[in-house]
Image (cartoon, rainbow, N blue to C red; front, side):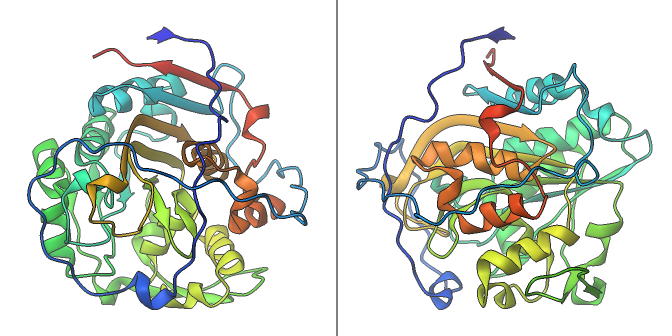
Length: 341
């Protein structure tokens, strides 16, 4: 791994912050689109100013995030074109997969496989080679079982798994694609909730030995961006309930569903018309992957790829204020490098 100087990753690229109704987020299918070509960079509108009343993030309690040793970085950011090397070198930089799991572990990987409308090139679903490599790395570290799952909001899970390309890569790597059946959801109370007092969660998500959250970084009308915290909505049965008080209820959910590791796929980012996209002119090639045990810190770093700051996302500010992670990612130990290959 060749280390490079830390880049000026806060250079604002500018993106308009629009909003759409929740009904639009769950709208029906779009027709398949012919095989894509490499998209041009989208034309973006100027960045809107920060809210004037943004709360000051509070220090993260020491009992909410697994401790990071002085030898290991808090955030790892990789740049390059090879998805497999992103995962292998990024995990190595964090201390290896053995740091997160023991031999014989049951592992669940939660990518974003939201719809069956488009292939991965349209940046609505997680890169399939990133997911497949994660399966391989977990099995190589001694995992007994590695399952990959999501609860799509459009179409069927079977069709979404196939269309995304993730099913093919997961099976080739020795993992399992699991359809999240209704009988495996269980109602859970959320202690100290601000707005969402209980929700029905896919039970295995809360009992697995290792939960890896692997969202794709993309635009979203209501959430502004879909990143690690937003990706947790695919673990519950009634995601519509989150929309009623989004910035509080998403954080309530995050106090219950706590990934052990978050890996944000920003190789191709959907810069507008998310979450489903459908136009290659909205896609930007960024060839970046972000790794951290702290979902809030990973999400906060990812905002810079859209010309934003963490404070633009109300739920990120709320999550930091409630002790779920670091909003001030500039003040943590970051290892950022170009991968080989």
